Image 1 (tube, rainbow over the protein chains, first blue to last red):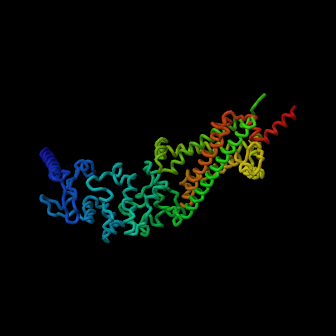
Image 2: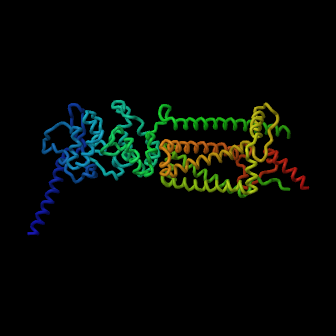
Length: 288
Length: 227
């Protein structure tokens, strides 16, 4: 009896396996071709090619296409429209329910619900067919790549103007000690997500936000246990300019002037020195 | 007859070499952070063994500089030689008038050069520049080294300013030392390619008479008195 159950299990397992791969290979008959395009009414042309190598390298390599693309049950496909953006989080929630619950509390989802189509869903940060682990240096959410990923929207002048987002987030970060350390490969250094969170990002005005004034000491305290309420009383993304942060601006002006004056004096000094040395040499040769 | 006299003792020359090695090492490991987006800095950081090793080297030479400074304080305070050197380096009213007299001479307004003692006003300025620079850099550097302890006392903006001052002051010191000082002792047509005083500690009597006339005159009158 035991043997029969075991055999049955093995057979079922094999069947399941082959069913999956058969399923994907079926999709790949068309989607595995680089020449496969599709014309949508509003989009001119969209590539329908999915690289088998990208899929095989992703964390979802064992999953069948239809597990995410639930609307597809056979061929020909029923719907011609691409998946709407707001449907993507629901799609991922099939497996990632806990993340979905966090994400739907975030400013990003909030904005999407209000019709801000530029707000990101899962795939904007994680990618789609080639999703990689956060520990993989190729991942968009690998610590070293996070600033670039966030900056694709938060460093866009167009988006900033459209949705009243603060600018200079990337440059101020890159010039901070955290930014420099991360750039040169120190993964312990804080990246955007270390302070702002990941799925549950909220604006500083929200009392639940990790960067709300009341929570800042705790957020900094994750790495710097001595960070006090007194410490966090200052601005974080420091814009050094006349209209930005005054202190650093004054320091910079002071030193640039000081150094400029020093160099000017030095150049004059050298010029006078060389002229005098020549004059002396002439005098010496005249005397002799 | 001996044609040169001792200008820097062996002790002073060793202090100077430790100072210059630590300053160079602190500069190359520090300025790369100030100019972190420059490709040359990126290359240097890689040469230095990455961002973490860079910091370690910076701190090691900071300790060497601090130890040297502490030794130097004891040396100028408690040894006869050190104390007399400190006295010779103390700025006096004469230094200011020397500066203007030299300026007048260089501009052709006066036919007479000012006469200097062991250290002229520029040499004094360089010495006190190093002292002031070291004080600022050690103080701000300590705040940044022990940043987790500093955070318990200082607000973030104060630490931000500290970092900025440390960086800019480093740039300034670098310019003064590697441009101004190196000109004086290397590229200056009088000494080119290099004044050897920092290595053998000696200065020729001719040069002494020429550049440090007051010291030369004192030396000569002392010799006369001995006879």
